Length: 135
Image (cartoon, rainbow, N blue to C red; front, top):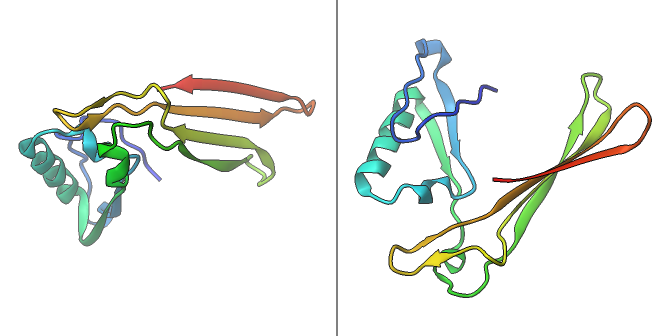
């Protein structure tokens, strides 16, 4: 897998035809960060340029209850087991989104979501190393 970090409304990935993508994924409600029709259209055009003719765009959006509710949002998340180069379990990545203090702007209909990631690994001495990052 290749990961690309770029402006989702204006990116170019030079690919030969045999390298075009089978699928593109927009996860964690990323599309909601685009708040105008021209931004959404530009994003879809950029994705269209890198997809195969029969390629698929997968968009994950939160349930409308999560976006339009003025009460606290649901905390969601998942855990991903990590493996080392030999295929042995080496730790776990936990991703959680949603926080009690996340703000919802009812005029613009935009909710600010907190996403936290916690990496827990096991080193050679079987001790746990934990790091938390808020993004």
